[in-house]
Figure (cartoon, rainbow, N blue to C red):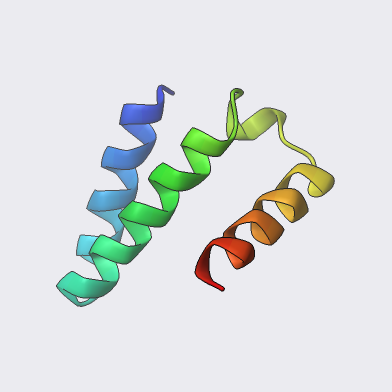
Length: 62
């Protein structure tokens, strides 16, 4: 699945869940940041990769 396909699936899924527009936008934005941070498919990521991203994201909002 391409990065674009993943984002489209996410968009579809959050719309189905009935989340608010703001929440949908936030999920989409965070997913794009996640994709841009890594240069490999999410299926190839390990726990340490995800922990590094979470730390990076935390530092961005401080």
